[in-house]
Image (cartoon, rainbow, N blue to C red; front, side, top):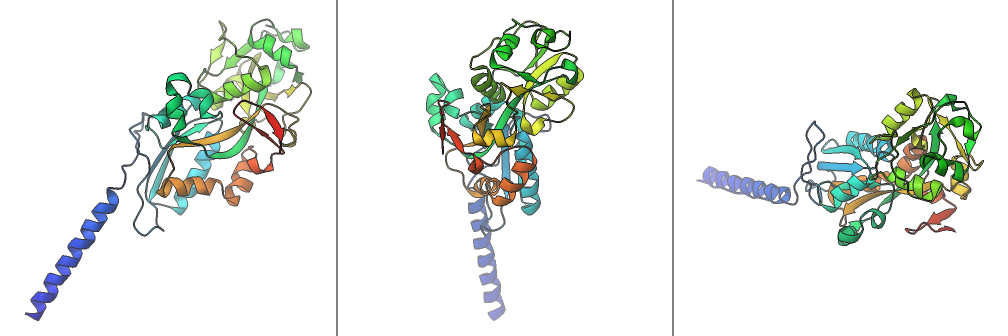
Length: 320
């Protein structure tokens, strides 16, 4: 009899533990994506184990390709430390990321611009539900094929190039070579930043210009296409392209921090509502000193805490 009583009590205890585990798993569904890059529906928060120490769940981020290298590198390190968490990072541009996080198709919408700038009119109410996590500052530089023969361009020269008034590098002191524009789509936050703070005007897509969805492809095209011009985040710059000064000012980290170089923006990681569980832990990790003074600097971004100026949603810059 004693043996039977002990066995029954053990069975009851096992059932309670199993029911408790099921209850924890019902706290949220995981975001997912297939190998083809198509997004599946994502929920507000990934799952988390009941211990609170061992995180688990899936996180799907999409959007800005300018921010993508930082998020990917941070995700790899976070997953190494938290094997129960799977993080997938996709591009597509800031507009795509903001739209998808607003529709709850992804957990994080990466953006180079404020949500209020991109989600206007009918989507304004959706923007209000998004929570802004500013993780770094990115600077955007005009870049050209190395043989263009130009070191610096003025704002007006850039405007004339991207509106088709100037079509040959010789018109701005460079080689006798036709200019080939490599542009980003209208959904791109990198394009929005470049147009807002370098050109100070929006431009139309010119006939004959090439449009690419990712910064990586833009860099490759500019490096391989004689006469090419485009723009890239500092995190993408290397000796395969020629970085151009703006109004004689070098697009350096020091010049961005001081406010002398104007073509920069905050890097945002938006969530739909306040994050919890593994999602909150991942965002917290990106703001740690380990990432901010390590990965952020290593990849060519700037910690927002180092900026001597700030910029609001209207683009107004003020000293800190």
